[in-house]
Length: 232
Image 1: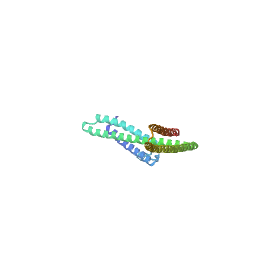
Image 2 (image 1 turned 90 degrees about the horizontal axis):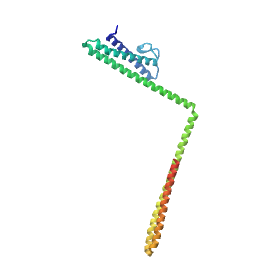
Image 3 (image 1 turned 45 degrees about the vertical axis):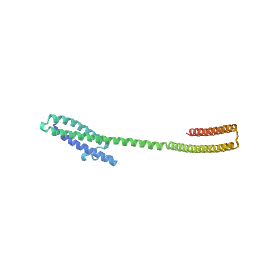
Image 4 (image 1 turned 120 degrees about the horizontal axis):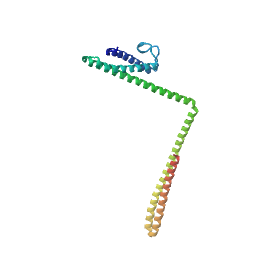
């Protein structure tokens, strides 16, 4: 004989209580970091350990989904029109509770899988650390040597940059001195009345000195750039 809607609904409500209690127990044990004891199970009865308890909750949720489908069909077929709206709300409430409990179980299982992965990674790291201690120390030594080399290169580059800056500053001072000497020479030549030929000789010499200063600055900059690229 086919089950009536009231019978299926009563079974579903009883199973919902069992699933909710089992899920709460899993979450309490998860929070305390313990595993379920085999002595007490759902609703105070003897029950399974954690993996079996989670599987039992999952199976009961599957049965509830089947009953939800059956009840959705039965309230349309068995109930008179005056009671259909009431039973429709009851069936929808059961379906909503089933989906909420299913989502809670999936979250619990995802957290358990994440913890298992973390435990495996920690165990692997611990094994490598114990088994390859010398290799780990060698890696640390190589890393320290690399850092020291980088530090030394940076210090040498700073020294080279400071030297280049000092050289350029000296060139700037010499340029100012040459300009002052040029002005004094013009004053003297104008005073003694020397010819234009002497002035042209002095100008050529000044132009030559200027190119010497520019070439010196360019060579210094090239040396600094080459040294920087070589150290990096």
